[in-house]
Image 1 (tube, one colour):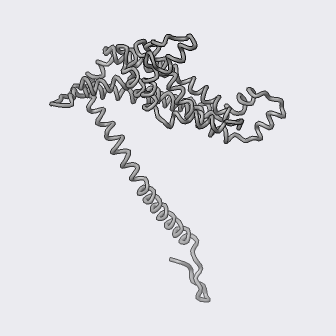
Image 2: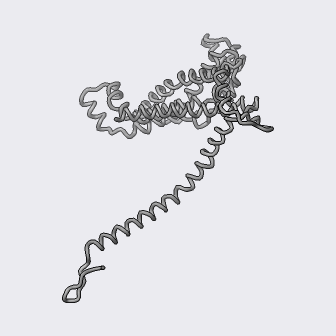
Length: 317
């Protein structure tokens, strides 16, 4: 009933009917918007399902078998997982990866922050410095690892030539035959490469800090360190947390530099976790065991990332 009739023939709309029509029109519009949104995100959902969820589920399934890559396989349950603590090379690779992560994470953040502060100051040569420090990240870790392998060669490598001139090492030093020297060289290489990316990440956050805050700090007589500690660092908390997450996850997933420069040597002293998974899969052809290692790696990376996000959220609160 659209309205009530008056004596002069006019109809007066009923308020309830108009509100009902508006609600119906709004609900239809919301359904159309929901369908349009689902249609827009469905390609992304399909990509995630095909290239992430399915491979992850298949990896978990393989980890529960004795899959030999070639030939029949059998379901073995959790046997691959229970065998991991007894695999000395796997345990050593975990400890070595954690050690490597602990060594490079803080220097990457500190050097990246200091370089970002220098570039932010717009001093002469800051633009050239920014380009030079970010260039290693653009070149890539694989290319730099091959270059480092050449420069660390005894007799003619640039590293030995320079250090011998400074009386810090012999020109015939064989870096890759000493676990500590090899780790030190790789850490220097990675810090040099990753600091440039951290610099750009933190610089983007610094450019969002209002200049009025620094001017107020100058009026109050704050020193440079007090301005960084009380103004810049608190406002860069999210950027710093993001750079730490990227550094930690990237260090745990380290592979190229160890595979190219040391090949895990001497012995198995520089075998990273990802490299051990690769060797188990590619060399030993134990696909089930390698998949179990990969699942453990995924869980470890997920837990570390979750803890870091929780710490960030608690700081924001």
